[in-house]
Amino acid sequence: MTDATTTALTSQPAEGRTAAAPMVRIAGVHKFFGDLHVLRGVDLTVPRGSVCVVVGPSGSGKSTLLRCVNELEQIDAGRIEVDGELMGYAEKVRNGSSELHRLHPQAIAAQRSRIGMVFQRFNLFPHMTALENVMEAPVQVKGLSRGAARRRAEELLDRVGLADRTGHYPAQLSGGQQQRVAIARALAMDPELMLFDEPTSALDPELVGEVLGVMQGLAADGMTMMVVTHEIGFAREVGDHLVFMDGGVIVEQGDPSAVLDAPRQERTREFLSRVL
Image (cartoon, rainbow, N blue to C red; front, side, top):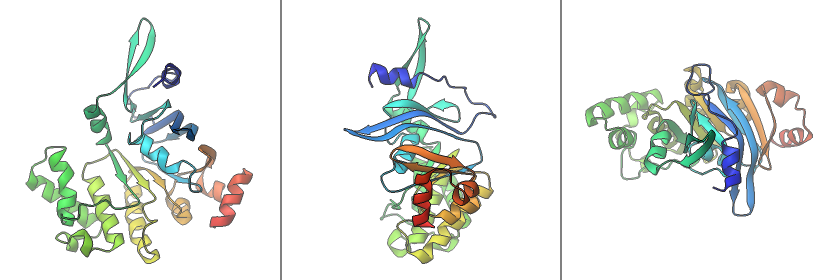
């Protein structure tokens, strides 16, 4: 990162982990892919236990924002905190001024292990059964015994309605079932935050409801969630906060019903007229 980027990154000190602190704090985040300026100073706060739904046209920066939260993409300016912890960097004070230092990849992986992410494509291991897919990360990353991991995986597959599919391989499952396995796999790491990147866009219409139902259950249980989706009904019924992005910025945000029923910005009205 450049010196200018470091200055931007250090502009707002972390508050630390407190019950009052939001689960996610995004401040002044910029992201470039070469000359393409994908995120242009995004500011967003996600309280604990809330569901933040992000909508917008393709190319608006929605998925990139989620990937930055999970450190799958490195930001170019700004800062992201999850549960009061600065993501991807350690902040040190020298001679009265703070400096940021990029964390070692192992430390970043440890941060990432606290965040569950479900992608548009299911990304299951094709040579493993549903049960084995859910067991793998707790055993390999957290060092859980295979017996304990198996019991936890069985509980989670039951939770997502797949208790009778534990021995099935991905090729033997429908798209909706595969996505529910992917959700169970993410939950197996006991995440503090769940990120969903268009989790239903690759599904046949009749399978969308079963995945959204699982997500609705997670929301009811108090899981903090950031959801990029085109499912406006889900945003209205389950979301606590709706964000509309376009051109790498947040154009409008607020209570889902207020934004959907009476958008203040013309660009928001134009987008909603095409999707509602």
